Image (cartoon, rainbow, N blue to C red):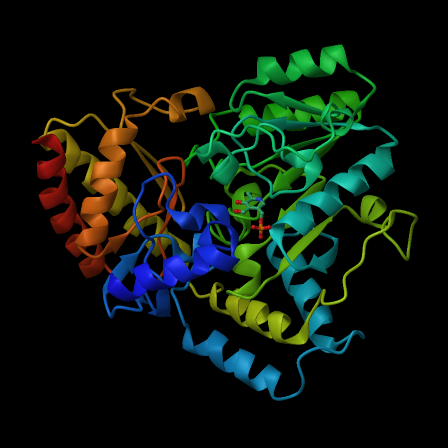
Length: 428
Ligand code: PLP
């Protein structure tokens, strides 16, 4: 840890908290974050030469595993032709066609540079299209750090117990209503109060920022119905679930068609990419076709498009999602069984290759309130034990985990062996 410690000390001098995104600072679990020098397949390696089995996978983009040879080569080839043109390219056309093929509800789409940009732009479009100001989101869902969405948000903000950030005018935040995930009554109540004012519901169809919470039966269909009843748009934030819980995302897995979809992470194969899109009649309101302004100097960047196209090409391989689902189930159920063997109550959730471990005696965790009342002390003990033994989980009890195609049965078994040793210690 010597080199990581020294880099962390230097980093803190010139970078807030020593990191460029808050959760990386290990505030929730304590200690020094390993500084990473390289990654390959299921592994990351720190600057001190230690190897970790990685269940963070860059917070989701690396569904194929790190440093995939096809993506790497695509980036190298694209970079040889220049890094950015600020003019249209064939790669952007191929990307739009590919996304539409995999996620058919995205009839028209626009590329952006991050998940935050995607959700921020989709919200503006929903407001512009409906001429309504209010939006509805769910407590514990995180949609990036745009002002309108950083209201009782999860992820880093949740971890630090800051439900909404200073710097967001109250006058602005008041347009964001929050409801309870997996609770249709709370949504109905909001619409009954503001029947003509809500432009859209934005939801993570599988919540991945309060650990991992899949939708209960009927929840997503209920949202679809309520939106149709009140003339609001349904936005699926599939930044995390897109190309991950199924090839066509959560909308394919649960068979619900949103009006707009936001993408990020896997669509860039590790490069900074996002996208938003949906029904043609709605998307035609985006400039220059329509009046809702949205733009980006580096949007559709040729190197990023090459990485994304390579990533989306690889996920088309037969059997990939069946394998990912099976691996994730073996891992999550395996850890739960071991925890229970040692007398530690645990509940697990998983959807596709997303999973969540909850140190709780609740049989099933379905909402924010349950997710935030788990045993954090036990989690932190488990977390550091795993890290010490070469397994890298997300450094906060409110964050879920990710499995990649590079996590073989053997890697999962190694993880379970380590978990057995660590959980015995947690129980002691
Ligand atoms: N939406 C969801 C569901 C996310 O998980 C995230 C990031 O984790 C975002 C949006 C924001 O994406 P980005 O960090 O690329 O801005």
